[in-house]
Image (cartoon, rainbow, N blue to C red; front, side, top):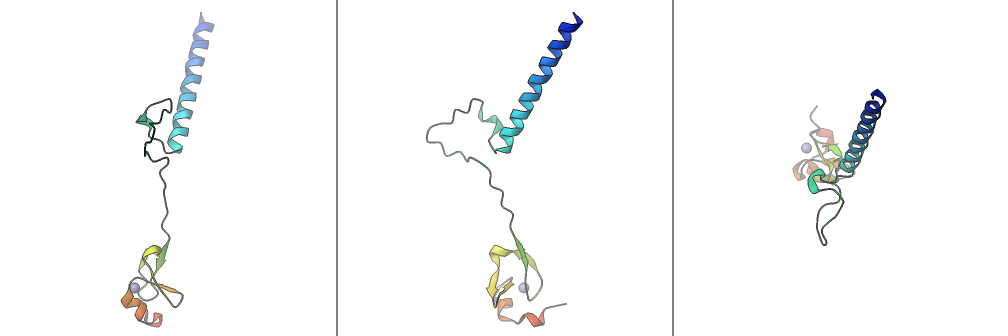
Length: 96
Ligand SMILES: [Zn+2]
């Protein structure tokens, strides 16, 4: 009887471990865990396949030293500036 209980407990543990691994793998792919099981995607659905996490590169203004996203930078003379006004001023007058 004890052996039977041991095997039942072992099987339950293995099943729980496999389900946990599957859930982690699905979450890593970015799927919604509440979307249902079986992977029956609706035809023509525009559900996002994966959440794209982009890390914005930061840069500092050559004039005032402010850190801001590089996509918002004003490029002039090979340097990044936070705004047009600072781009027009020389980098040498940077506030220390
Ligand atoms: Zn600036």
